Image 1 (cartoon, helix red, strand yellow):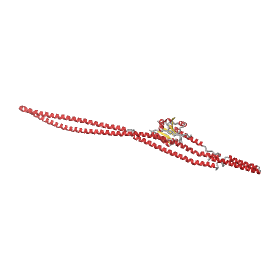
Image 2 (cartoon, chains in turn orange, green):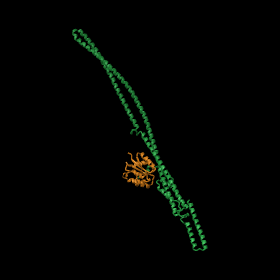
Image 3 (tube, helix red, strand yellow):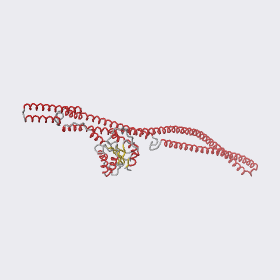
Image 4 (cartoon, one colour):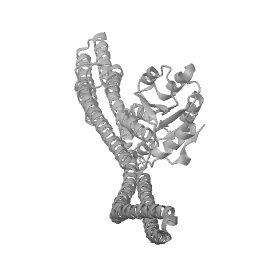
Length: 122
Length: 390
């Protein structure tokens, strides 16, 4: 059974790009338009990994990760931050929130898939 | 305009001061001549105060703060200009950003569709994924094996038939022996008949004493006659059987020859069909390999295109930041006008707050680089060793 990955990004095109890469590798993908929208998708079903942008309207990525990690079902679900942000201070924020990796856009699909394969839950 | 207005304000100030000073001087002289005393001093003080107010008062533009002076009208007009133009610019920016995002999302969807179709075509044509995991090559091998077993089975049947034919030939030999044996019986019967005839002659010569022996000789002749007839019958039957066996043997041989030819023909046809099948299979394998290679190459190209499409996200962010910054401009202009209205001090709008606000929105290194005026090329896609794992 395919593993499910939640992709959170306010850019529809980026969600598409990430989705193409992940679906091509055999993952199922669910999407969130921003942090708040993504939280509504976290209703207890198995999510094996999250790929999340940082700068988004309504709820930014760092806040989302903090809220996501509060949910008992997803406490151990790994999160990869995929963002244009490259400042160390932002990375530290992501790490403190509970993210497991930080990938700076633009990204190569195979690079993202490598990180996903390394972190995705069994 | 500000400079022009600044010059105009100074000119007005000086003009008003000089006018009041001249009027004051003239009034003082006239009052002195007329010796009006305290009235003269009061008049001069009022005129001096008026001159000072004109020269240094808050309404250096010639009007009270917030009045209908040219500067005030200009500043209000500037606010209106900003309120009219900036939203339009913002809407155009947002519209362009949205269109670009929609177009790129659509493009990404189409690329996704291309990749899916390629995958599907590859799966369908793949010799590894056909018929429940059974490859075309495996189907060929299985078919060849089954046909070979059919041919082997037919050859085995042919050998059995030839063995049966050999046994029929053996039967013919046995019937020949039986015929010889029947002829031997006939010969013995003839010899016995001759012997009985001689015995009868000798019995007749013996007279009455040989009467009994004559009866025996007669019976022996009778038996030899029956033996000869039986021998003839056996010989006749064996001849018939031999003929039947010979006919059957000939028919079986003819049938065996025909079957052998059919067998060889069938084997040749099977070899030919398998060779054609092999040629087709090899061609399909080559086509499939080529399709696979091309598909991988196209997927690589699509992957590279998807990397390039990510420019939209960066450009969209930059446009959003600029749009948000543009939206602050009316407030800056309004504050500038309010400052003038409150203090009468006409200042050029300060770019620093706007630029600081813009800078605070930057997320990308390229934005900072562009902001500082340096040339910046589009960033390359992140390599694996650039990922930060926590």
